[in-house]
Length: 208
Image (cartoon, rainbow, N blue to C red; front, side, top):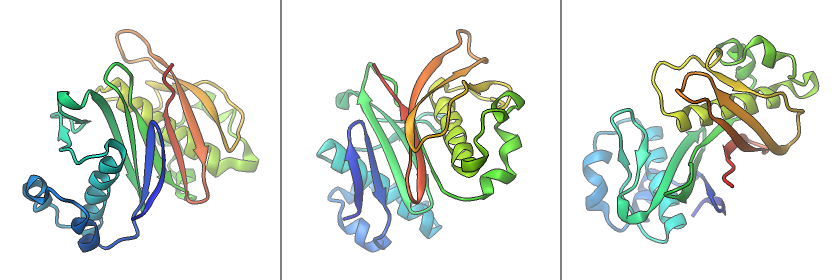
């Protein structure tokens, strides 16, 4: 099994198994068959299965993941947990918190491509604090942070440059930052933790 890390409240799974191998690790296959059968792409199937397997490891039992109309995941009330899910090339990440806490997580594969799309999520003020010596990693932290914040505020038609903001922070391989939005009725300032790994960058909510 390829559980890379489970350090509450987050877990990370590296997808190294075949679809068949992952499917064989689930006990209640009848729960999952209707939704799984609609997935045609193998990569999407592997992400879907790895998510259920990682959740099983984190909860200690299997559970069905439901989705709101906007796609946001949630668990049944009996679990008394908030859940956030993210996936990228070869990796799946989950954040589980108590029902009274916020859950938000994002994981992104380390790639130079983020430099080409920076104008889609970074505003002029944020460009000023990007460390040129660690440009790709610093940009990925910002991208992950805004994706995490987007999941938390749970609103439609959000402009990542105009509505989601990151307070200046110096680059480090791990640390915290503050992100906030200007599109909610009451602006939320959220503390996020981040970590830069060999293959990916990850951010998640730091609850009190």
